[in-house]
Image 1: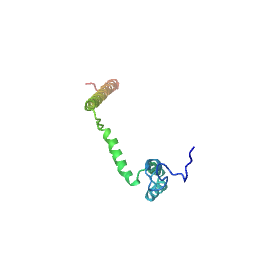
Image 2: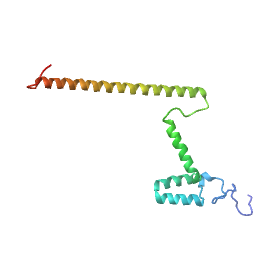
Image 3: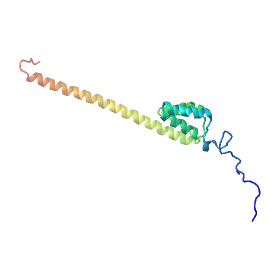
Length: 146
């Protein structure tokens, strides 16, 4: 058995606390500015404080949060307007685009049929109302028939 002399040293040479650590995603990004923003966001509206806390725990700087939210919002709004994801495989991209186009055509056809059916029902209701009115007028005493 061999014995080692001296003190034990952290093998990774990583500080476990402070701004000089290398593994930011595991420990969080606890700068003074980030802490102040987190406390203020908890004071004013606690759900925003939770978002800021999560952001800091993931090792990110709070100053990057508004840009990330803006990008994510743009992505979410962009996905509802059409095909936005691109993979490295062009054949798959073409297939996916044709599927999206087919879905949009089906949606358009359903919308057109719905509009036509609504017009048909309105016209049928108008005819039924006209017939009911004509029967009322015919059965009323003192009405003149044409």
